[in-house]
Amino acid sequence: MRMARIVSLSRGVAELVHDGDTVAMEGFTHLIPFAAGHEVIRQRRRNLTLVRMTPDVIYDQLIGAGCARKLVFSWGGNPGVGSLHRFRDAVGNGWPVPLEIEEHSHAGMANRYVAGASGLPFAVLRGYVGTDLVSATPNIRPITCPFTGEVLTAVPALRPDVAIIHAQRADRAGNVQIWGITGVQKEAVLASARSLVTVEEIVDELPPQPGAIVLPTWAVTLVALAPGGSHPSYSHGFSVRDNDYYVAWDAISRDRETFRRWLDTEVLDRSEPRTTTDTTTSEVGA
Amino acid sequence: MTVAPSFTADEMMTVAASRALRDGVACFVGIGIPSTAANLARRTHAPGLVLVYESGTLGAKPAALPLSIGDGQLADTADAVVSVPEVFNYWLQPGRVDIGFLGAAQIDRYANINTTVIGDDYRHPKIRLPGAGGAPEIAANCPEVIVVVRQTRRTFVDRVDFVTSVGHGMGPGDRARLGLRGAGPTMVITDLGILTPDPETCVLTLSSVHPGVTVDQARDATGWDLAIAGELPTTLPPTDEELAVLRELEATKGQVQ
Image (cartoon, rainbow over all chains, first blue to last red; front, top):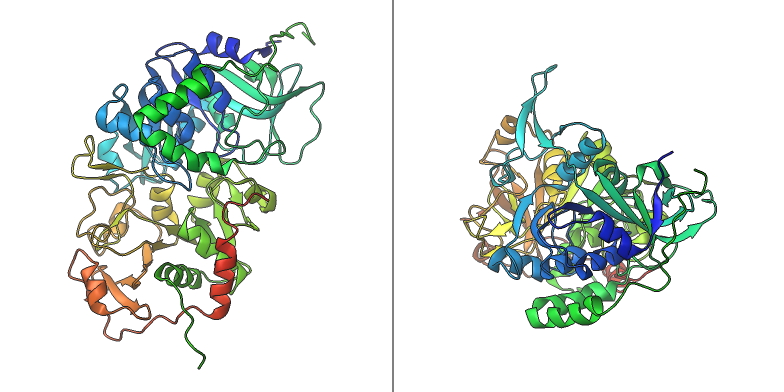
């Protein structure tokens, strides 16, 4: 049977994320894959099309580091704090590189992932009608219901090259368990050609967990151990949201030089956590 | 009568917004003042208010005021936690969430809302704002929408620069013509007063002023010729209980439980 391989984070990113790829890093406030995002910055990926419903601090960092040429999104802010300064600088001034944007609503983006996960070319919803998003974003189109004649809205499926998510745990076979606010991660993984899941822990057997969803190993490409990999967001049951970091990001990101210093000391000059190991378990249970 | 308590304009706005939420209804809550007001309502006159956050937490009962729509305590205290596609498709889209609670960077006379860009050129805006989030479909599909926003000439404009979320479009009949099933904004609550759409013209009309605010102040803070309701009541000031609970709540903001 096809199974996920367990690799180090650096190997996972090197293997799955290529220059020019369309990459979806998901996690709705919870379980945001920051460690993987920083690894993408360290490996100096360029010309990425970044997809994310809420490109908050993680994409502000990737955009400021010059990894992205395009952003597909529905809400770009620092939750509870304010604006994303690197995002605004890229859109407004082309710094450090110009950033093209494709803008949707949350309902539209969620449905685009659902269509991608479902193997459909587009999704239908009651949305966008009467808004200026329709003229700003060319791929929002009207569609007539063949049964009732009602005019609804169609948006195309999202089919990223790679999805990156963070989860609480995986077993050694690569089955992934996620609980708490599960967002749109399952849909993002199933919509994408390849996927990398970073996890808090790898266990022999997944224990029962109320409200958890499981991504079976054969639906995942690579799993990498990255304890604390969602910081400054959180991993329900493992860590709490570092609200002070989000507040501090406002000042760090406001100024290009302050941001560059942050990038050097906090990302580029660091290697990934030592706890991450390169092991493959492709033999286990195969 | 007891001595009037001292309170800020923001506190009056938040209290007025909380009073607009009836007990037992379900409310789609955004972060900021809407979340504060909804949590205040649940602790005062509306203990049965169902808080729905777009992170998929249905019936959240947070002990502290959350800093984001996805704080862990929302999931811990929710009746159900569902995925993001589910919250939009199964719960919001069919109109199951009675009231949508929205903020705005700009709002116009027909209560259309802009949270996308300031400036005429979308590609080269004067100010890039966060964007739509859940708002367009909340505005379209919730049976009723309440907007909470501070009233200034920069915010209350004749026409919004970008329609992110449709209020009453270009006037009477526009929502029906667009196929929008909810009633749209029924109330705009500000730090100066409460505006409601005129039943004939759909134009936002001042229908209550907060204590200590004059009609001229409200007019000066509005970018169109603001109409005033024939009988203009003064909003009841916050009660001691409302103020005490609100301040207690604000002190818990962002605390991790």
